[in-house]
Length: 217
Image 1: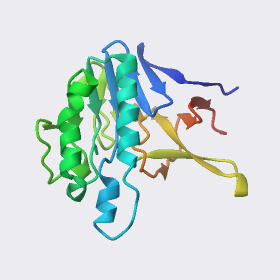
Image 2: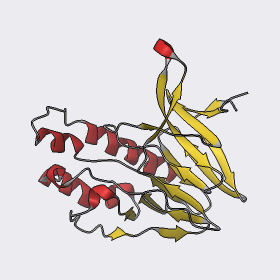
Image 3: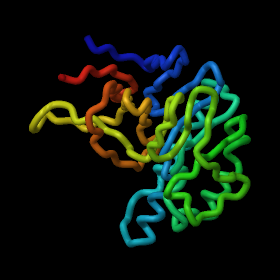
């Protein structure tokens, strides 16, 4: 039977990760908060193309991140790529917010480079290549690493639940056993999603809960 809670525990070879309803992962053993695909400045990128998206998505996304940091008091926050959406969205206001972010978080902020960071410069926030962190291999796009659990973003996984008019698209965490990979949902308020294919484990996110979902075989 599927169960729902504000978080779900995921164990990989004895290493515990908490999958959070807020679309992030808490690693209590290492004191690290992990998330992916904030896409800050996305509305401004669309506005530059004449598409009138509202600009309040960044506020909601950043407030959600700060709430998590205040709740968990992490040793560091690690973004698995696509912190920003693109150069056109890097306004002076957004640059100021990013400079202030580590102080507001109360800990270092690290960024694994995503495809949307390429060609952009972020003051005081160097972009890192994929890296190991204890038993984890952290990357933006999926990048299996033998002997480690690959945590990645980029795919914005959603699960399609139900049929016809009752069909829902819900953001989710997806685990692929053969690749030893855990795909994170997009954290940003203005991000879409792509249906994930077959996964060995799915955790759906809805109404502030995480639902351990057992797929039909």
